[in-house]
Image (tube, rainbow, N blue to C red; front, top):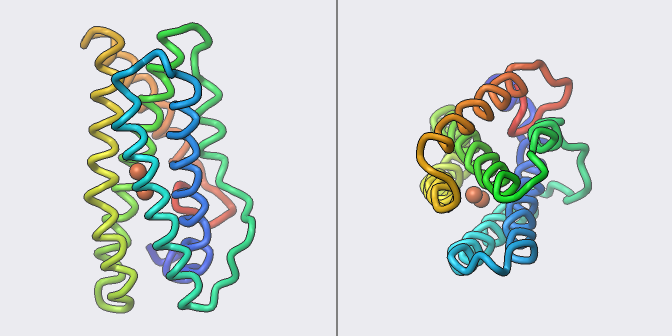
Length: 182
Ligand SMILES: [Fe+2]
Ligand SMILES: [Fe+2]
């Protein structure tokens, strides 16, 4: 938290990109899986929410005079996606579970920021507090969608494997201050 507090501008900028990426990943699902009718509406709703989050963070950047620009991301997302299996439905299961894990990690980080900034930066603490609830809902949704594709035992086993990979990535020290970094 001390590192984040010292680099809040960078955290906010990274956060804007994360929300945009979350929307992009959801829209990509709509393009890749039109034959899975069950995921269209919930994922379209989720994409809309992520874009709304993106705009909220953009507004905050503007109010604070932070120039919106490209930023080298943490290796987190790309490393996590390297382990996706190739065949279907395993591929989609992995994509959904990884999205669920990213949402959960966002929740953890937002919780830390909400508490850590409550005194010093109430505006930001309030933003993170409000985003926390919807990212928790997204986490649940991605798990529920994955549960439509495989039985409970296989799902739990795969979630366990991917969780371990995710925890290893986040535990590695990162030279950049990012939302999803150690
Ligand atoms: Fe979001
Ligand atoms: Fe989300």
